[in-house]
Image (cartoon, rainbow, N blue to C red):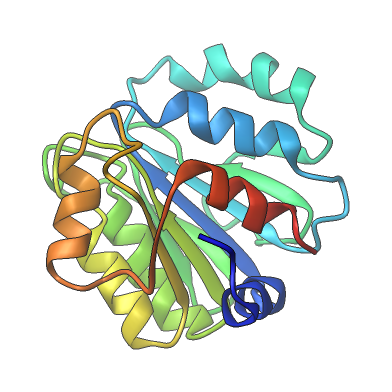
Length: 196
């Protein structure tokens, strides 16, 4: 579907882009990161369900292919634009009111730590309607409730069309509770993120 002006304007005014995914989402998120210009003028926060050694594997891959600065999140680190932040394994990543990160070791949610819900819900509290959040492929329903909270706060919420998703449970869970402003095919997500 052609992208309407409303979605483009809401994306362009966003201060932060949140990307959440699990099984089947890594390659797609990597391609998105690879295509960003250095001057995106937004912070990008990525929460992927992953094993502990995941960052060491992707750090070089992402750094070699990204024009933006990319780093694993540290506790109390300030969120700044033109930087890609990746949630570390074995911690929940929260966004605090001072627009910095907080790392938390409380129980896993949907068998996952980091939990997409935790990051999305805390982002809704801090950024209100100044976020764009996209939920991708995954094998559980983590992210759906967080996406709904973001939508309720006025943020732009997008779900990858299950037709394109390798694992459909995560997108379907968000669609079922009406957490998505838009359900987009992968090509449309790429097209949207290219508009500045």
